[in-house]
Length: 190
Ligand code: IMP
Ligand code: MG
Image (cartoon, rainbow, N blue to C red; front, side, top):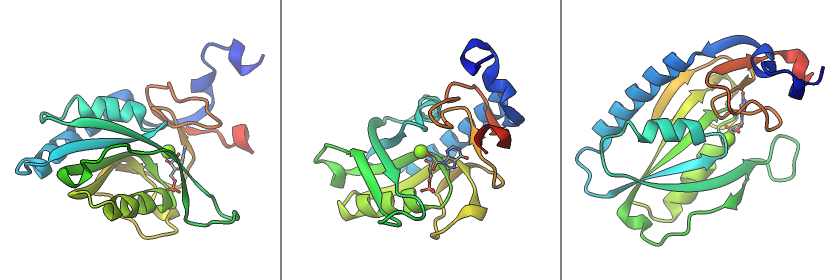
């Protein structure tokens, strides 16, 4: 049977559920409170910059729990992995098109930090555009995988070095719609 004909193929491809929907819900509540608290005295416009595609479910849940006016922007980036020509460089597929960034507090919303390359380059890039402030919020962090030093300002959960799927995270574009975060069975990708 191909995976597309099996209604529950997604869940069966997980060897373990790392974060249930309920756990994700309490994580987003905690993060939203921390974010509110951090920006409570700022008079600048708060702009969430959502990194497509993986951060979409996380961002939609998170933003609805932040009780403060905010605006939403999107960026789509990919990083060149190890062994490619421009190590540490990121490729921007969709950029921010606004001119009021100096009047904004930018909060980058990411699904997961692995090598640290994407968020460290993206943070630098936005700082060079003179935004009022740049901070980062990630749902997941795999600190043991770091290739460049990077510490997020807000982090939902640190996880071990395993490939995870669900709640926006994909393997070859599949599994993004799972309502939980699971560890993909190694036999699926090896
Ligand atoms: P970094 O630049 O290595 O930190 O890359 C982070 C990006 O790699 C994330 O935005 C994801 O798109 C992807 N990624 C890293 N680890 C995983 C994982 O376990 N599952 C799915 N995507 C991942
Ligand atoms: Mg991503």
